[in-house]
Image 1 (tube, rainbow, N blue to C red):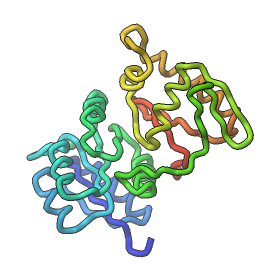
Image 2 (image 1 turned 90 degrees about the vertical axis):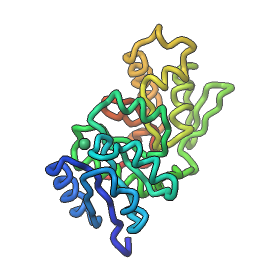
Image 3 (image 1 turned 120 degrees about the horizontal axis):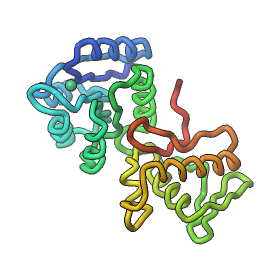
Image 4 (image 1 turned 180 degrees about the vertical axis):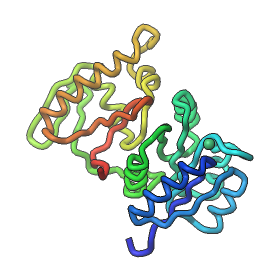
Length: 229
Ligand code: CA
């Protein structure tokens, strides 16, 4: 990067904000911090940060309102951070225009990796990469390079859902909604076990590539590019 990408951290926990700032600076970003909701939109409008890390629970105005406010005038990438896993389902349901979500407690290293990933894929518009896989819904087969595997209907539905929106996090609940008519009959563990089998088959197809990433406490996302460690 020529000019330093600037990251706005909106976080009312001072220690956490300081820690994040240190890690992001070490990764080469310029960092600005705000500790409450009300001044955020005006700051973004004036300073045009490259990305906003936005805490959900903030004094003055919460992260959801702030996010909506920013989206009225800017497509700056926004990563929401939240301490409440159950909130993430709500966030995903609202589709309010955040680009990614991180659950607390998180490691600052993980946040830096997410920041890099979101900036790399250009924020709000997930990169439509050529793609390593080609999916054929009629035969339930997936091809990559010269190889081909056959999936079960459930595995195929799971992969097709994730694959259609690279980088996007799907909560287990939403995946179950997509896959089963009546998801009350299946548990979270069912999704996990299908993902496990699916990963094993994909590993035969593309050895050494991790395509389906777990998002701790939330669900899964499909990403062909590896996050920087
Ligand atoms: Ca907070």
